Image (cartoon, rainbow, N blue to C red):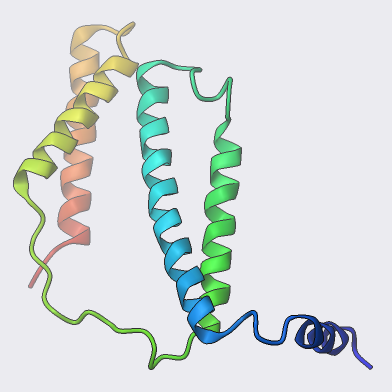
Length: 148
């Protein structure tokens, strides 16, 4: 007898009705929501680390957050394989374009963080690096989101 079959039979005997399709769907949705929250937390910790260096690394560390994200993605993938395609609805409606106010605020935040990280440098060299980063970001945006 193979070892995986032994565990599958043991699992079916101990927990026969515990893992049903509805339970898997609920767990999948909860993991999906928790992934969103962990990613928002990770982005906020990156911003906090850029503003006050060492405030996050000294207490939590990025490795724990990244391991949490990877475990969450792994569990999402496992549960997604168990859900049948009929149970999952796909949104095929056209999505709205992103708001220009949000993009401008993200660009402004990025400019401030880049400028803050290079305060010890000469102002003109700092502005050159800032313009180079903005140019690279604009060209990357044009390459990734180019519509024909």
